[in-house]
Image (cartoon, rainbow, N blue to C red):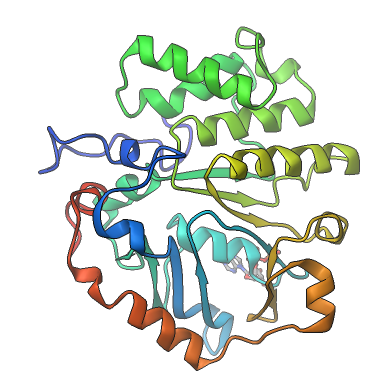
Length: 301
Ligand code: ADP
């Protein structure tokens, strides 16, 4: 039963017998070994073309450090979703590379992609919950595909539901909940595996302004426990209320501001080649793999 294209069980690998990759990334714990020193995400000279000679993303360079909360914003059609989809490998980079925990994920084999996704939580605009399943079932699926023991699934799901404010609602049919509650179910499913990086693609796009702010606050609470967040939104009212770093995409180009919109108005920064060079020098040693990295990309290379 595949909920998403990525909800399939990774094939057995040479990492069998070692701890599950996601376990190393539990929020609040320091990842072991070399990955701890690496930025969680690096885009290096990334291009994406849907039409020949008209790149949707043009020479994108930016770095997300562990523990950051980053807004990705820009007008509709600018390429925000595409940028997020390149990270969870729904789309593939045409030029350049993307490093996740120091590993190049832009050229992972299809077999390795589920291992990458074990380390990501993803929340979409349209929730992507199964309406006729209970709240518990919608969250538990993320652990069941990892073959986690039932007892642990129960306790982890209960913990995740409490974190998103849905304590005691596990037995409710998801379709009977409000839109805001359904998005909370989706957030619980995204965080129940305690991912290293939480991706959100317009997660408030289907919600009214008050609920949108509630959901943003929920992401901030999760961020406060140690999870890195990349939050794509075109909604300026959210950006106006929170001084997080902004990565702004327009016509495929990227600009950024470190501390919210007021900083943006004073001093938008256009990343230059030097950003890319700096990013590359930090990640030069990415061919030396830790067990964690071998775990999520067993057939890579
Ligand atoms: P945003 O999220 O900023 O609204 P998108 O990333 O969804 O923008 O889209 C950026 C551009 O890429 C748009 O012109 C869109 O039509 C195009 N695009 C996105 N996905 C595809 C696809 N799968 N095939 C062809 N074109 C696409």
